[in-house]
Structure formats: C-alpha cells, structure tokens
Image 1 (spheres, helix red, strand yellow):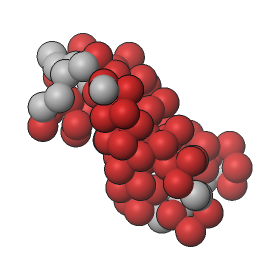
Image 2: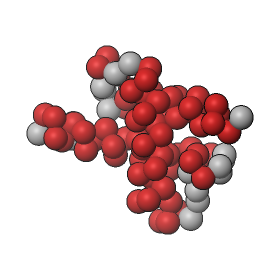
Image 3: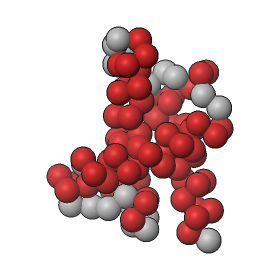
Amino acid sequence: MNFIIWIVVGGILGWIASMIMRTDAQQGMLLNIVVGIIGALLGGWLLAPLFGTGTINQSDFSISSLLVSLLGAVILLAIVNLFRRGTPR
C-alpha cells in the first residue's frame, strides 16, 4: 500500500513542481511521477537535515515532508532546465 501512495503523491508533487517551473506542457504523467520521487530523494538528501523532517520516501507523511519533497522536485527541475537550456528559469 505504501508503494501506491508513494507513486500517487510523487506524481502530484511532480505535477505541482512542473507547474511552478513552467515545464508542465513538456512532461507527461510518467515523468511527473519520476520527478516527484527523485525530487523527494533529492529533498531528503539536501533539505531534510536543514528542516529536521523526513520526505515521502521515508514514510513520513506530514505537511513538512510534503513541502520538502516539493522543494526537492523544484530543485531537480531547475537543475534539468539549467543543463537543457542554460538557464534555471
């Protein structure tokens, strides 16, 4: 059951991050899920120690963990945009 929640929440977070970074038209549902899950991993590695919370990948389902996972997904899209276009946008 955790795996299904992980995919659904990762997809929603990836979709929200793609709307924030204005890359929503370039991504499909599968890429939104990948961005959400990898962004949560990145947020857990970079931001979770700063904020003292977990991420959705660590089975911590709270508002702070959702925000850290979302910030990680936004950072991931900024890095991808930086290498693709030369600007983080």
